[in-house]
Image (cartoon, rainbow, N blue to C red; front, side, top):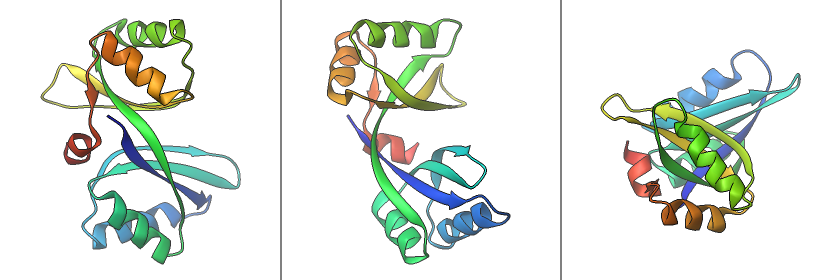
Length: 143
């Protein structure tokens, strides 16, 4: 029920993101979802890829500072209030969202939200108990 995300610390300078995506391209790694947050000195790129282990190893081999983070991918109704319903449910269970990002599949009616929770197992239990579809990592990596 959990998925693996790669977190990469990038210097905030021209060309560094292009360099990273070139390395992934040259090794046939496909980015399935991503989020980039920055400060004046560095950025944190969070990516879900089709081949976690290979991507992590080649990025390290090419001088990038990478980390592994466990996240949860959830289908959320793609309509007004869909996200609220999910967040309210988690809040009532005492689960905090540390960060999240989303992508929408063209063929579906749901958005896919990637969450980092402070209490991951409780979040999964709460979502499952309420009939929310959690996307297994293996499925997420191939979307």
